[in-house]
Length: 289
Length: 259
Image (cartoon, rainbow over all chains, first blue to last red; front, side, top):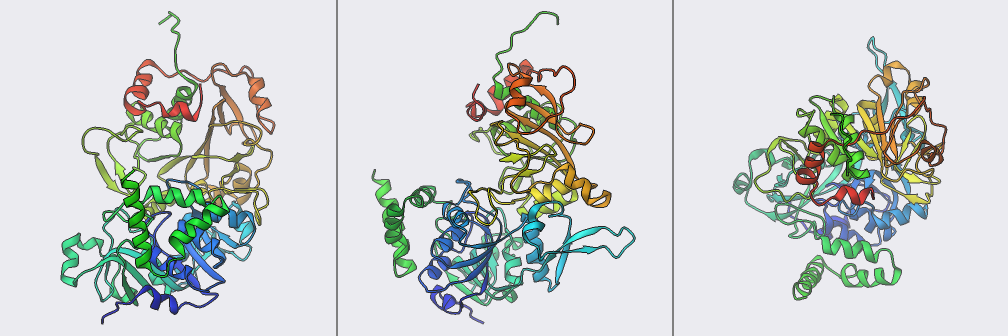
């Protein structure tokens, strides 16, 4: 089965109010070309589930987010995400703030079609105070220990970005960490994977050992070839984080006029190809300085 | 011995030695540190009394060697293991870890906040979020680092509890809190533990040049202070050499804590 598709076709499937899981971690291997496509639409009231990076800031700033489910939001080399902070400080988004491990547990429960998974994480902390719907569960064995019943984080849609994939939906990471991208896919009804490069199936194992093939084709409904699709987050070994660009993003976020210029330069462009062109022109200009 | 040696150790280097002491007896477990002083401190511990400590490279690998803070060491890094984030969670829930985290606020029972300041629904300042603090504190040994000791950080009551303190752990009961293990707080002014009878914060030592009165003045709650408070020990000459020549030749720690 050929699952190749485009950002535009994937995002056309999305509806207001959907719960969308976004793979990667912080400012690392985020499916940014899919996020940029969401920014071009009228979509709203989304629930975003993620170990957050700049995609959270961009979606919050564009008014797409009703609720955010997260353990943190960070740009890594810049610890605090400016647009996310602004949205929180304006009280403009609802939040489900979790311990990082609880977020994994919720995705894992959803992936395994379980209603919850027990954990000690959260006990005694304000995670439980600010998530009053979260229940406790008592061990049915002799120990009788009381644990947090981390509910399944069932997703409507998962969006992830990989280094390589084939047209059938097998996906490969070539960097140091698979993050939780497989769990997002297994927790979601519809699963879309962008990648740096689509290759023939027989070439996947030539790019890296078979253990790097963490996404198999039962976990994916659509594959998008998106070279530079994780920009400006890192996607090693294909490319590192575009720190200069990220700095520009974070700096302009603090000034409405500067942000408007940033938006016009990079975000109001009609297609991903134009965005990549603008990024190329930018780094070219930088190179001549 | 006997002759008085005048040490030229900076305040930051005193803090580094205090961090190293906090990890000295940890044996074979993952030592995770955030901030320049804690990072240099655990590396100093590994190079001196605690060679069995495990350390992450901050990405996804366990480093078998001890790199410098600037990371421009000659030679290939020694990778002794793979520790992607999901295995970090496995490891920390299994308990083989001691973390030293930064604190935006901490109270007398060690309840910790780096999530946000102010009203949770509409915070005055959104900070890191819960990150791993709830799971860390309920699962394994935890210490804290505060480079800017003041009444704004050492508060009567934290705005949000991200890391669990001793009073809250006790309220959970023995079964749920049996892995909760708050060790110490190291600030730019002194070293503290939770050795008071009610397991609240106690002053262990004041850094050279710092008085008990200064610490009391900069702390927003009543500390337990027993008798004469000793000075925090100075780093030894071999320790100073390791800090300055091997671990932190560019002196990043002195930027985190001015002398």
